[in-house]
Image (tube, rainbow, N blue to C red; front, top):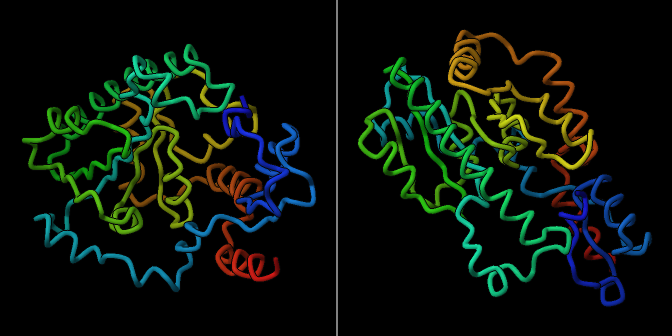
Length: 278
């Protein structure tokens, strides 16, 4: 439901404007009568400005990362970005912890989503463990979502020398820059990976996740994985040196253009100009 992205609170009479990442969010807010048309300022998403080639020199170098984590030149590095933000929701505290949720995210819908997230998390871990066992030269970086309890990952991978748990404050762009492939479950980090031209693999549960056909189409920007066989096949293709398929690149561009103004690296300057102009 697009309303899942819309605040339950009414604020349009209290603000002068709202900075928006792209045209799609403007459409959603206007359709749900959350803003006046004159309040929409299209700026882009400044975090994505880091995708500019001239800024990448500030990222952690692969050599430095590998040295710190005992990774060798022949090792392929896989970044697993968990998007299971709802998996560890405490539904018994719904009224106190989640009262701010959009009206469309009812307790029942959230419970179902949490159950789906837990199920897909377990499957993803199982697929990854199987593939790592078959490829001892591959290395895995585990980056959990801040809302998750990390014990499930520690229990699953804690004693595996192929697995790295970076410090919590490590910047996501540092991890993306050193990785050869990115695994995720509908994570925004995948879009950041696209900005760096990284191949991405989506764990697909087979259940609808996005709220419209346009959102669903963004899945086509990834390799799709529904079991360990597909995961292994995707990673083998990526590590063979083949370029990202053209169909994936086209799907990425269409999504980024609609949601994030093409990720053109000018978001921060547009925001500054807009704020100064108020």
